[in-house]
View 1 (tube, rainbow, N blue to C red):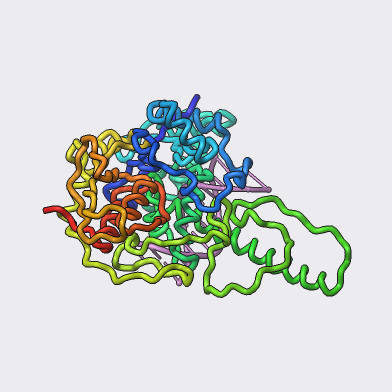
View 2 (tube, rainbow, N blue to C red):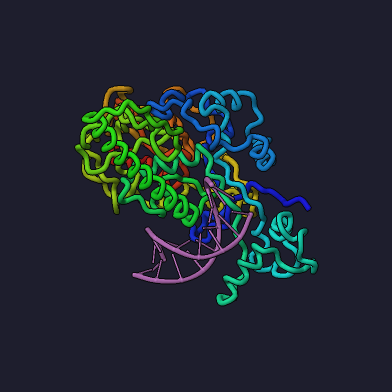
Length: 427
DNA sequence: TACTAAATAT
DNA sequence: AATATTTAGT
């Protein structure tokens, strides 16, 4: 029996109100913003050649699994070109696969063979388990595990930590700082609604594990290399493959770099800014006032935080036509995760455009109409570039917000930041 | 509750 | 074997 593959995300148990939507690279869907995207700015210093073939999803698998969602949304040639240009054809990989459609099973489908069962069956049930109604090993295990709780045990579908997804993850981790990178905040920064905190926590665990291991190896190699400088042996240098968890510069040589001056310098992870091209500018306000991002020593000084925007005002910016919040109804019903259309937020042009921070920059309510050239539109699920443009325009200098795949809460961060920079809202 | 580490599952 | 989820401890 063929398992039903769907694009929708996990239940998102711990993510209130945003359980089933997905807004990764939402701007790619419409393609309207693509022309403005400067892909070279996307990931500074990143050579996508670093990508590990081994880590990439099997395209066949990927598109087989996600065909439903992507056929519609990435069908346009323009989009295809753009995405190919950017991520070497793995743009779509930020999709989370879900081997089950447990949404509708939540409580009601306690009875028969669920999709999950079917999926699990494919691997096991056919071998033994005579009684058909019997749960698969996974289901059984889950059931056993949750027997005490009495809840319906369902093993969640695995999340494909694709290169792009992983990159977002690492980006978030780096932005937070390795010591302050906790699942909830990482998730927040990643802005990917299909992920749950547990997903991130799991990945974080693995990330830390790998990192620790690799750091240990690096240290060992360093000492070894030092020793070797004193007592050259002439032996060959051990080579290791590129590791996605660590730098693309993995070799044991050259000798160890000078001791870091910062308490934490993001490990150079594949697909991320190189030490030579560090993050130029963090986005402090992005992280909300309650705990702004730790300012790295190499980051510019941060001005004081502004008072938070009026939530009631900004809230409607996130509303969709359905009037049920920004999450399209279809998604709430468990539709596959896919880039979603969203309302626009416009930023009126400053009296003196392009010249430094302008206190009179204004945000105006969403509008779907075409924007005059004098105005800059910011999608509610804005691309990094469009936000860059918005803030950069305000500040009159390049700006690099880290998170990709922004979603409304992130947009709020954007707005907070803009307001902090002197943007005022239109009554 | 959230985070983390360990145990399991695929 | 690698990597994800689940469980359990703090």
